[in-house]
View (cartoon, rainbow, N blue to C red):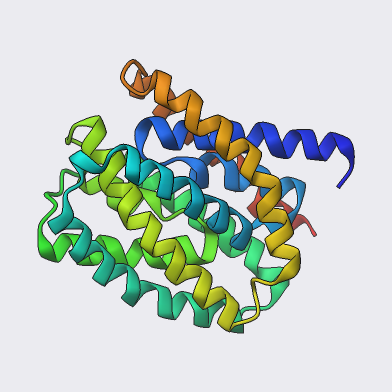
Length: 239
């Protein structure tokens, strides 16, 4: 990467991780499509690896508010969704993965703005976890399906519960990526490039989490994700 690209990577990761630390998810929605436009190798492995570190810290920070019962059901679903996602990554040609990623980002936006009110029950948590595993492993945007179930919970409960699901889920997804040859030395080095932004985002989000106007931030994230997703899809059809 050029020095300019390196600066952009840090800025994107700071923005994405600050958002994730404040509202419970957002690195995948905000950071992933922007990082893809810089270097497609960031998706999905490096983002998942850096998110694993970040969500580990966030889980510790919000441990008192975690819905452990919901985490168990969502993790069972996440495991189910990760397996077919690994198969997709192994079988789909590389040039079509960007199109698939763009479609996943737009699907995440649709889920986020759907307005559905779904209670976090065992059946819905299983389904949400499966969809999260599928989207998270393929495109590192596994947050919206679980966030939808906890949209009316307190901020601390959302952050703690989602981080617990993501922590274990990213381990599963990374293991699947390694099995299909999609996470190696190059991806590990790119993961390290995202860690400074993760550290800054963690400390900044701690100061603003209780005061953040989630309505404005949510609309901004959805707008950026929509535009970036459309650019990725448009690039595929224009090439």
